[in-house]
Amino acid sequence: MLGAVLFTWLAWSIYTQLLHQPNLKSSLQQMVDTLEHKGVVAMLLVLIGMLVNWGLEARKWQMLIQPLQPMSFFRAFRAILSGVSFSINTPNRIGEYGGRVLYVRNNRSKLKAIAATMVGSFSQLIVTIIFGLTGFVYFVANFTPVRAEHSTGYSIWEKISFGCLLIICGLIILLYFRLQIILSIFERIPLLRKARIFVQIIVRYSDTDLEHLLLLSALRYMVFSAQYLILLDTLGVEMLWWQGFLMNAVIYLVMAMVPTIAIAELGLRGKISLYFMGFLSMNSPAIIAATVIIWLVNLVIPAILGSVLLLGIKIFKEK
Image (cartoon, rainbow, N blue to C red; front, side, top):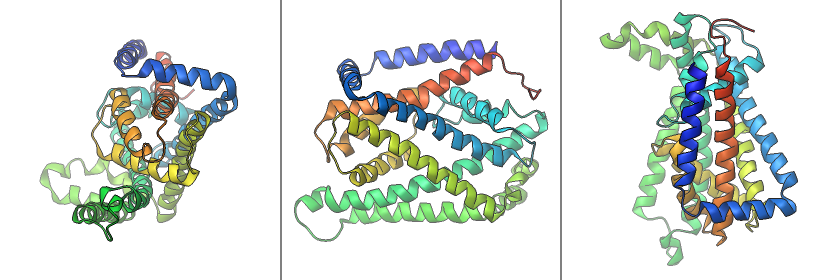
């Protein structure tokens, strides 16, 4: 019943979202025309990238959930896809926690699993901010109005923005490798004290475990960045690959900082991509088309697969 309702809701959400996208028709037409001539290999690589992308996330989840229950990779992969289904209509995809915990057998462990998932989100955020900061430095050094006027140095707002991001990144990294700080906060605040049992799992991970998670997060970041760059190249966007990577890093950073709902983020993602990639190429239809394809491949298709899996899920029984 849950899977059927989610599948229907998801299908309607996708339909209405696509229906209201500006320039979607022209972008899709360019996408079809280009891919018919030279995009078969590119689309195959992008689809393989989707499996690798979520496969790496499944490996992270498998590692994180290990202290609570042994879980096979394929079950972890199904949990990830189900999480995508739940997350697609929730702010900043927080619903993915609910989808994943359906695959945790013990009811008492479900809240602990949410805390474990947050550790994985921390690792991905750290990678996003580090690469994003690198891209931000490249962007302000080459494309902001200050540079266009041949001024030297950075403006006060650029310095403030970079400083704030650097501080946030430093704090997140510190917190990531000192997760006991979070547990101590729960122990010292009376209102949170009763819930501390559910976050105790986060101190079970060693520095080696956390470093492994960061590596997997970095690999995942490289995969979905490569997917986008492959599509841009296939659709005729001419740019140096490293420039595209750095500007795309800024796009991911902005998307991570802006509250969005996954199913409704296509329009915002398209505008942000046009703004930053527009400094490298004037081929706006191709940029939009690449953004639409990535949204469909990395979010919509996994969400549909996840909702189908939920049609036959056995919540408390390992198959």
